[in-house]
Amino acid sequence: MLESASTIFALSSGRDKAGIAVVRVSGPNAGPALKALTGSLPQARFAALVPINGASGDLIDRGLVLWFPAPASVTGEDVAELHIHGGPAIVAAVLAALGAQPGLRPAEAGEFSRRAFHNGKLDLTQIEALADAIDAETEAQRAQAVRQMEGELGKTVEAWRTEVMGALAHIEASIDFVDEALPENIVDAAAARIEVVLPLMERQLDDSHRGERLRDGVRMVLVGAPNVGKSSVLNRLAGRDVSIVSTGAGTTRDVLEIHLDLAGYPVIVADTAGLREVTEDVEAQGVRRAHDRAEAADLKIALFDGASWPHQDAATADMVDADTLVVVNKSDLMGDGRDVSGEALLISAKTGAGLDDLVDRLGQLAGEKAGLGEQSWLTRARHRDALVLCMGHLQAFVSMRGTTEVEIAAEELRLGARALGRITGRVNVDDLLDIVFLDFCLGK
Image 1 (spheres, rainbow, N blue to C red):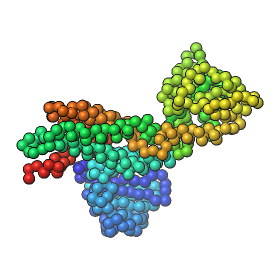
Image 2 (cartoon, rainbow, N blue to C red):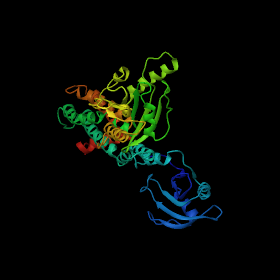
Image 3 (cartoon, one colour):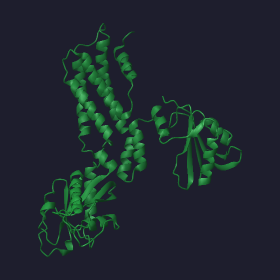
């Protein structure tokens, strides 16, 4: 439990002027503070319309207040909420009145969530999901954050951890209670139990980082020769002039990015320098950055010149692989009867022809990269790192089947369980004791 002798308060809604603002108070003095401002405590979990007064008894506003006694609250502590008019002067007056109450102080950043975690109301994955939900800019990001807030990842990790802790408890019992009648070959039995869990973890890791792509954005990069129209295509996709367009080669020397919502998926499209042999140092740096960005991208958009199609410049053609969408720009300059067979998508950044098809295709590919229709639970590198660490210890344990060094085997399981606990923040040795005595009824 978190030591929370102080009672905290803060504006929980946005700071901009609004019709309604929500002020939240959490801690042991939340009830007395609410009573001091309103004259009484409302019925628990029922809204009451009451006058809200300042420290000198003057009326600040009339608003709705709610009272959530511990532990049935968002933080697990006594919580009060004041729903007031959202004018800056009213909000400031209410905050000042709360600050004048004994034992109250302004909350620090994230302190409500921290108390919810320490009081067992949210695990770390749910707290991270709360931040993701607030930051979500697309429908797919919102959906993923909501699934995470509902505990999808936490429940899965806890199920795995339960299996590991169960196996560990049996082995610990064989070490600590040698006089008890325990099953033989207990390490082998525990290894068989772990072998059921390992493929499930492996399947989760083998997700091409879809959850992280969805959270951070699918990265796409425009590559092609100078003057092929990369900057014009970027401006078309953005719906505004982001990149300078010129007939002179080498206009784009740095990487320019735009953020898009394509079919509900977050996408970051980068414009890069034209691919060619150059001697001028600044442009050469731009070309190197283009190559670096292409290597790191989830998808390359290889742009070719329709005026010379099907001829392809070698520098761009060498970049085409399975993670590349081939696009032919300047389709308005293509002659009649020109061979356009193959996978190339024809567009014209000048006339707008084919741009809708390009947007649709990029949205489809973004969905595939981010796991269209799939539940990708791992949304942060720390989730992945902890799971990889856990699997390493569990695989080491399984390889010790038949060992007489039971203590070392138990330590591998313990470290694996601890790594899993890092994902949700739930690491408790009391869990192990509970399982030992529940499964074996020792000491009765």
